[in-house]
Image (tube, rainbow, N blue to C red; front, top):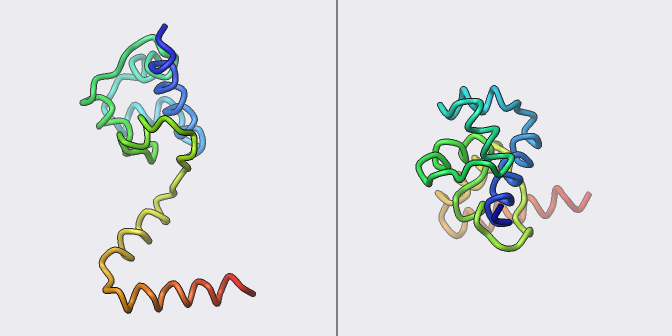
Length: 108
């Protein structure tokens, strides 16, 4: 079996488990059969991009994060993702003020 394919399944399992989700829950959320998700995680089945696009949002990964060669990617919670999305809507001055506030809070 191709190592890259095994890594895809392994990373999906890693992120699913980090979220505390079961195979059954991921199957229901993604609309992908339990057996297919299991086979993907075990490296038995090569997922299509379409299948990955259905699974990845429910494990907190994007396609680019999944295929990143480095293991430097990290888990981002839904709360952190919402914070980042909100931060991106701010103008430069508002962003600087938020960063100063965070700096002040974390220095204590």
